[in-house]
Length: 296
Image 1: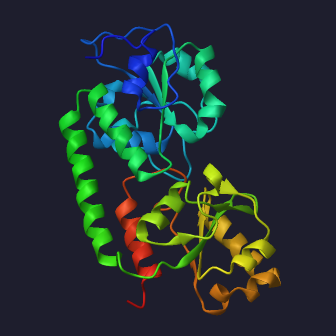
Image 2 (image 1 turned 180 degrees about the horizontal axis):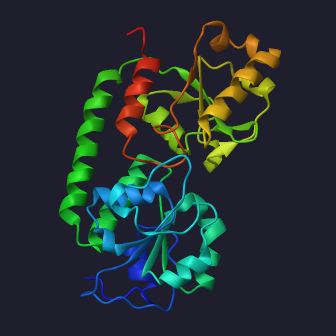
Image 3 (image 1 turned 180 degrees about the vertical axis):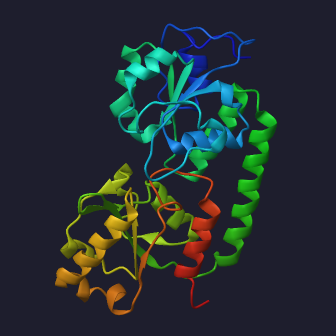
């Protein structure tokens, strides 16, 4: 039973499965309703799916690209996911801050300074997201709802994998476009890379030795010569896709790729293929199904 979020290392780091917990001074007793500041849209969606009441979500992120679930929209806006407003969070005095673990190195020390307990959810892959859902279910006394969500995920993945378990795995290059005119290569360690792996594709850069994204020259990508090229965006998808069109037209090296010659370059919807795991994963996998196995 949750009695304190204090020197128990925030409930033993939420039973050791929510990563990046910060030992702070605030106490939360078991008969209180835990209040939360959620710093990313993906986190608010998880809380919504667990049916966490609006009164417990006191802080929400600002985003030009994604929308906070309707029932939380009256909560105080605390800035974007990468640079939440510490002064606003401190004023709200939530019992717990929840953020994606991709931002742990940037944010953990800041949360420590304002003396508010925090946990960083693993949203780099679906298994991590659902593990986080299980632990949040325990924390918020929503275990039944968490089990329902996990069971739905497991059932869907068993059914999905059965369809293509004997198919040849296409070799895939994934480009993550960034606002301002640049891109990085997404590995299996990223969320979009995890989706491609689950769909049966083989990432030409593997897991990137644990790195979500790597910088690679076009010439090196050409040596790998992927069967398929996927392009998505971190934010501002219209601008990013315009950049990709210019890059592929102006840089003649791209014209040497078999994937380009064979019209195997696909632009993905960043609502399904963004930076964090989310509940659009079924639409994402079904999109990949059509791309990876279009001739089957």
